[in-house]
Image (cartoon, rainbow, N blue to C red; front, side, top):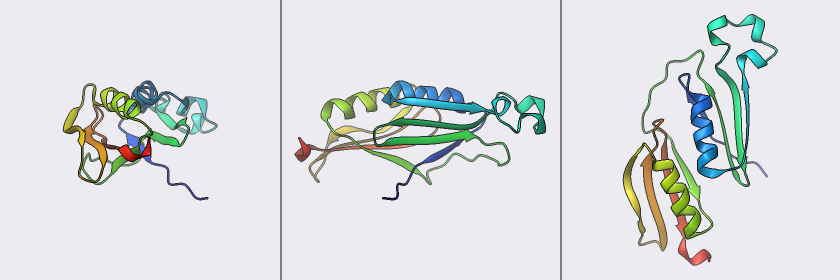
Length: 137
């Protein structure tokens, strides 16, 4: 089965962001910097600490990321990361963790479609929606 995995780009703070997401969700985080890559000697010295590739995985949650080295970053509302949670405890925990230092645009609340739902922008400018279908459990 094919899987869609979000790939985030950051402006030099990818390692910080991915460690934050690891604190939020748990799971295994693997980070490779430019200095740790086979391309290290081909890259400018000031780029050595930038993240070439990172992957966080916990069950069905997979997030990949890197520091944008060759493109201008523009924060905006084009992409929202949506997490379908498995329990009230999980949605409450993830929402509290992700919103730390961020901005809640829609607090967690019961919705007309039978779910608990909320939206926020985390401290790195990433938009998140969390949903828990109350009929699941």
